[in-house]
Amino acid sequence: MIESGTLFIVATPIGNLEDITHRALRTLAEVDLVAAEDTRHSQKLLQHYSISTRLISLHDHNEAQRSKQLIEKLSQGETIALISDAGTPLISDPGYGFVSQCRLAGIKVVPLPGPCAAITALCAAGLATDKFKFAGFLPVKAVAKQQAIQNLLSETMTTVFYESPRRVVDTLELMRNELGADREVVLAKELTKTFETFYSGTTQACLDWLKEDANHQRGEFVLMVAGEKPSQTNISAEALGLLKLLMKELPLKKAAALTAEQYGLKKNQLYQVGLEL
Ligand code: SAM
Image 1 (cartoon, rainbow, N blue to C red):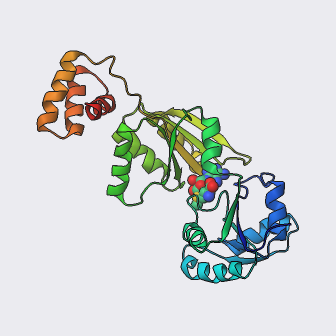
Image 2 (image 1 turned 135 degrees about the vertical axis):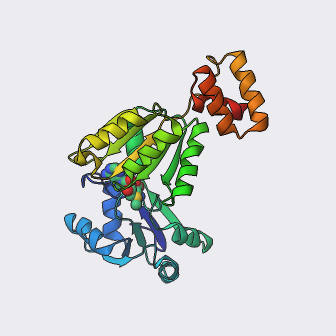
């Protein structure tokens, strides 16, 4: 039995329909209403499991107004499950406004854990997982995107991005240009599906792999960038001296690039050292 007046946040499969918990199926069957990003899409999932609960839409364009309506229902004791097209709702998906308003209204919100593309990709990528940063989708606008990528120059944690197949080549090109050709990247594609693929390599190797076959660019991607290793061990005192001197007169990026050129070092590493200095 589920408690009346509760909102359940239910994770659904990201490809393989078997990736749904017993608890998720029981909850979807028992609630009064399922709020879904795309009702037609989610109807197929419910049908697959012979669940006949009524669906109602909640997406980016109606979230504010729909939230009020659903909070009223919850306040009257109805039970609602929130799902998205795939994976965990609110994770680069609608629902944040709704959940925060439910909390403010004192409504009980219960999460049901399940698939999330970021975590699924990360746990098999072979990159450091002790700490990581989930960065969602990169900005679409060129300047903001470049800035977001430049921020990775000093990022020591693994960073996880969602990426569209239409932009993945452009993103890798920008990463190669801004972070250098040898920063380690992992592409996780079509997770849990028939053509699930992990490709690990440098920014340049990943770019080459994407370009060598149009099929490599199709599907859904999680893009992970290894953290920059903060190490000063191979930097001589002279190189450090020059970096410090140049940093007084120039932006750090330029100072790091000039020092790198002079001493045959990696500009990302010098950039990182500059930040530490
Ligand atoms: N809420 C979802 C979650 O928990 O993962 C993410 C929704 S977001 C709108 C969709 C993005 O997630 C896709 O563009 C892709 O980057 C990633 N994604 C979703 N399913 C995936 C899959 N099966 N394989 C790889 N990436 C996937």
